[in-house]
Structures are given as C-alpha cells and as structure tokens.
Figure 1: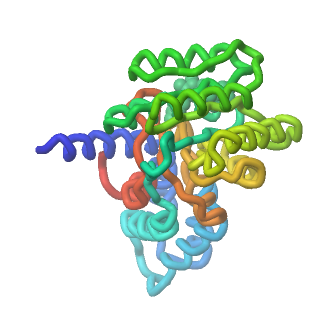
Figure 2: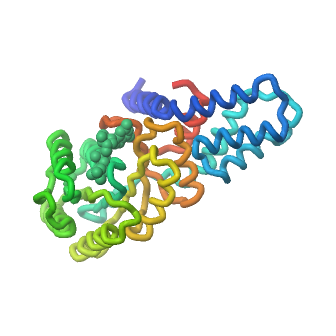
Figure 3: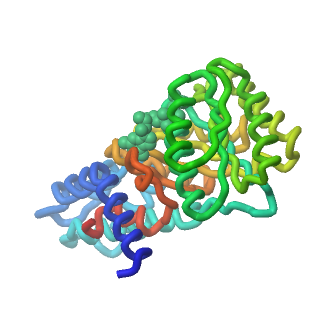
Length: 314
Ligand SMILES: Nc1nc2c(ncn2[C@@H]2O[C@H](COP(=O)(O)OP(=O)(O)OP(=O)(O)O)[C@@H](O)[C@H]2O)c(=O)[nH]1
C-alpha cells in the first residue's frame, strides 16, 4: 500500500470513529424502530425524528424519509437499506460544498483570516493548518491576533516551534488590527507564501467585538487591497443549532469564504454540518475530529456521508 493510501485509510479510520457517536445514535435508533414492522407513515415520521435528533435539519430529514418511503410501503425494510439512503442523500447535499482551500500563489502571501466564537477551535486549527501547509513545502507565517487571551498567544507559539513557523505576536491586550497590519507587512517583506491570522473569539451578538473584526479586515486591506484571500469560519460541532446563526453573523461581518468544522468527535449531532450545507451553501474546507495535528483533514462529501450514516465499518 502506498503512503497516500495509508494516509487515506488512516484518515477514514479517524473520521468514522470521530463520527461514531452520531452514526451509532442514528444506527441504533433505526434498527430499533425498523425491526419486526412493515413500513408505514408512522415509521417514516419516526425515521425523520431520528435524523432530526442528529441535527440533519428538517429539509434533509424529510427528503430522506420520502426517499425511504418510495416503493417500500407495507414492506419489511432493513436498517442497512435506510442507512444507504441516508448516505446517498447526505452526499447529494454535501458534494456541492466540499471544496478544498486553494492557495492562490498569485498572492504572496495568501492571507487567511480565521474567525469564530470563543473556544470553537480557531487557534488549534491554525496550528494544524500551518503544519499541513509547511508539509506541502510552503513558507508560512502565523499572527497571534487573539490578543485577549495570553494562552492563545502561547498556544500558537507552541505550534510555531513544532512546525518551524514564525509567529508574530504582541503583548496581551494589544490592538489586534495593528498586529494584523504588522504581520502582513512582515510576511510580505519576507516573501512568505501563506499568512494565517488568528482572531479573538467573539460572540456573534456582541456588536463592538464584531466591529473590531471589521477593523481587522479594513486594516489588512491597507497593506494588500485584495486581502484577506480567504476568511475561514471555525465552527464547533458540539454547539448544535447555534452554529447556523454563527454562520449568518460572521458572513455578514467578516465575509466568510469557507468553513471548518471542529469537534465532530464530541457530539452525537454531527448532522449539523449537513443542515449548514443545505441552508448556507458555503464551501466546507476541513473537518476536525480530535486535538492532534492529524485530526484535521480536507472535507470530502462521500467519506463524511458514509461515516455519518455508518454504512461502512472503520
Ligand atoms: N475533541 C476535539 N477537540 C478539539 C478539536 N479542535 C479543537 N479542539 C480543542 O478545543 C479547545 C479550544 O480550542 P482553541 O483552538 O483554543 O479555540 P479558540 O477558538 O482559539 O478559542 P479562543 O481563543 O478562546 O477563542 C482546545 O482544547 C482544543 O484542543 C477537535 O476537532 N476535537
């Protein structure tokens, strides 16, 4: 087996075991309600409820139930058939949004601004991305723009040491827009390929914090009018439905261009990613299933759909 195949197998194992809480909840509930009964309207409603409990959203849940019902009324069905339908319908929703983050080399540096609420996993994601880009042979710089939290600055420095990537940081409490300005200027001077900018976590309903984020974007544009070239919103899968309103708020304020969903390993409601894809149609670049560097990987629709439906063993 080649290294790439090994890498793929290992990621599939991580992804499917990360999504185990969601897939077993769906699988167990389906098996319980399907065994020893013929399919009728009541059963379809129960199937829909199971999918809603995994946060797949009303539209997708009812589409799946309708697909299960087609030609199967009054017949015995198997949980495995329903899981196949879940996987197929979920893949249809996810395929259009599963897009890799493309680093456009015309921009030097390619500026990636990373936003999200407190604790969503921004700093960790930046660290993991710096490792990934460095492994691809790109020269990276990180900016510790989360100037509120001393631990975030330290955390980024640890990732910097680990990946041999310079980290531009200021004192705790310093102006994050100023820091972004300095970091972009330095990255430009040094001819870096990628600049990853961390930002302080903020609540999407706190106007003054959101306007600070707008300031960071304005200041970045003073150095490079075309930047930021990507604005990644990091979403914590464990917050459930609240993730939908985070997408709305951050898209309005910071012009989000793509999503990263973390902590899918910490929830039985991993279907939230499907609900977000259905509603917002924003590109999903990466998903995270743990704290380690190898626990974040590019998002692929088919693998995610199979893992969430539990149609294939890890
Ligand atoms: N289980 C799990 N934990 C994760 C994942 N991604 C991040 N974490 C953990 O979540 C916690 C918060 O991550 P941070 O990266 O510090 O979050 P942040 O968004 O930078 O937080 P603030 O600086 O407070 O805004 C850390 O303990 C991470 O190790 C994941 O995919 N799975």
